[in-house]
Length: 275
Ligand code: KIV
Image (cartoon, rainbow, N blue to C red; front, side, top):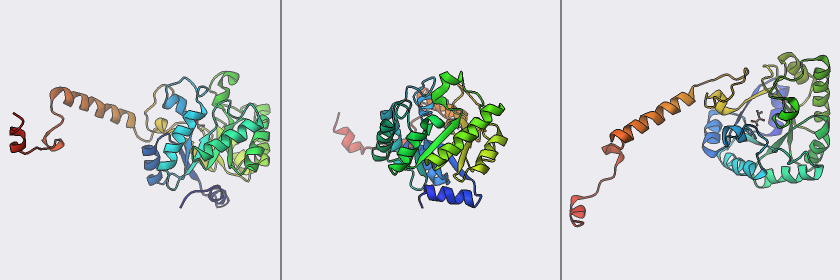
């Protein structure tokens, strides 16, 4: 059965944690879906882990729609949430609704996610009123990397912690169906999770959140340009892939691959007629 915003709300009420991973293509989404991952985020992190940019700022609506469509085809049961890329919603409430709608209509997302606190509450309200479930993302917000001066933990001082709590409440009030907390001290994230009636999703925010998300290349050890402290590598798939690529390369060069069992036969009498 397809995971819905209602199912996530019920999970919170029953104190059942839910899982989320990022995915950007059909095959990976299908594998995650079959593994029971409940929600898939088509994150704008695709700018870094799929497209090789230094940050998420260059990601376009076209990129998001392209990848979201593929993920949506692979996710039979998992709920698909698509990130709104930089400048697709900050510019105006009108732009926000229009682009959120595009991610649903063309990308086949079930919900969208956007970054920011009080300043994006009008956008959250308008998107929710348009009938599109919207997840808010606070704490470390990578689209504001240049304002924050790098990827660093947020909410450590009294003032910053109060602001995060206030933002989380305001976003819930504006109509966000969930709030994602990135790089927030665990005890603060727990307090926010207990305070809100909508679910929270944590990344680098401890286990007091209602759900957890990781970038899949991080949890599979496939992206070594940056490994944040909060990442747990569940399998060294990056090493396994490299080994397979090396073995393939060697076998191609030595002529060991393809072997007889990988080739198609032709009858000798057919072949003879060619000479
Ligand atoms: O873009 C992304 O992958 C995200 C996660 C880091 C939460 O927003």
